[in-house]
Amino acid sequence: MDLITNFMNLVAPPTALITLFLFVPPFYFFKLFLSFLASLFPEDITHKVVLITGASSGIGEQLAYQYAKKGAALALVARREASLREVADRAQDLGSPNVLVIRADVGKPDDCRRFVEETVSHFGRLDHLVNNAGISNICYFEEASDITNFTQVMDINFWGSVYPTYYALPHLKRTGGKILVNASAAGWSPMPRMSFYNASNAALINFYETLRIELGREVGVTIATPGWIESEMTKGKHLSKHGRMEVDQELRDAQISLFPVVHTEECAKAMMDAACRGDRTVTVPAWFRVLYLWRVFAPEVFDWCYRMLYVTRPGAHHGESPSKKLVDMTGAKEFLYPSSIKSPEIKNEFDKSPSHVMSVNKSIIVEQDVNFWGSVYPTHFAIPHHKKTGGRIVGITSIAGYNFIPRMSFYSASKGALLNFYETIRVELGREVGVTIVVPGVIESEMSKGKVFSREGRMKVDQDLRDVVLSTVPVERTEDCAKAIVKGACRGAGYVIEPPWFISLYFFRVFLPEIVGWSMRLLYMTLPGAPTATSALTKKLLDLSASKDLLYPSSIVSPEIKAG
Image (tube, rainbow, N blue to C red):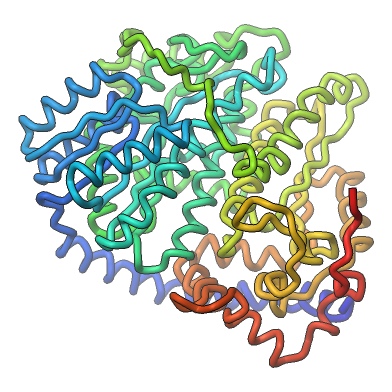
């Protein structure tokens, strides 16, 4: 087994690079051709039913108008009912044949079930689900006065999309519908002062990438990752360090700086067009994709630029950050920011249902509580002590934060959130506290013994399902992984990927996501109506090759785990 891992470490990276070099250019030409065909024959959404969350302002409001212009019937959801009705009236003027207004809080599962059921009851069908609701926070992680105030960022941004998706999927499958999810470029960009917002969007991206593999062609999934867009957020609306919603345009200027802010109408049109074409992703403005490539190939440079521009010395006012000084000195705000966001006025309708009052079944979200918040809380309380000693944080994430495996959507989302969170606080902390992000692959542990949360939300050990997920991937010994982690942390490494050959999978996911998704679906997904998950090709490969004894340590062959 050790010999196999060493062989993979030696052979997989160069093989991956050669394969990518030969395969990427022709594949991208083929993608360009398919994109051209899709643009010629987009989906006709006349009289189709579109449900939009967060539709009372910003991108959600403009999405309603764009769909209305195409003749779609709309179900608009938000907490601000009076604002929703104004949007509904204008949408009907623009061409929507029927608009349903539903006041609801996407952070509440019962509300999400209700507005999906009301939509289907009213229209008889559902064709597009647009998950758009979201809130942001702007404060350094260590400045947060009470860390629990920020759970609402994840509740709204992540669960506020997951819940509607769960209840809408049966209806979308009947119509061959589509899901359009509004994430953010913050999902892969570690912008300082936005650690929770960044993490929630990383979780969102990972969840829907995994869901796309699971659904295949039954339901389309388009993930939008907009940059700075004209909205209440770019007006300065955010959660402060005290966990209260406020509007601070000076802090907004420090955060956006010299980035041009795109008009909401332009962003909404691009998002709707992408969904109608069946695109996997859409980034607005398109030039933000260049920043993503910098993030992939030169993360250290990316972090250094962010820290130089955005991070002030301890105790300094945000107005002293270079990003704020640059926008003031150049006067660029006049031509980079739309006139609509220069005023701090926002739609401020009284909300009788605050987002932090939740009605949540904790058994559903326990995996994220442990995997994400279970690392965030200790980090928050440890940072003051780390600063005194010049210490180091070692954050254990997972390769599932980069690569998406069917049946592991929540796990992948939690690990993606954790990756982005630690990348953000590394920028904020600079040299005061080191941060080593560990990305383990398949490691000898209780998880590789088969310990999982079942679909009923109960912990169990299922080694047949474990074999489906691990298949013929060699399992590294815990001792070897732990040794590599300690060695990496002591030398001040930014990342430790163990075993190292898993970096090859990351580059395949970056440059050939369609191929990776297709391969994962072929290997891991069973046919509709198959009796069990063990019908998956991965399980059959493992059984036919009889390689379990060679690839799995003897310690994970037994289903026994530590009780208590």
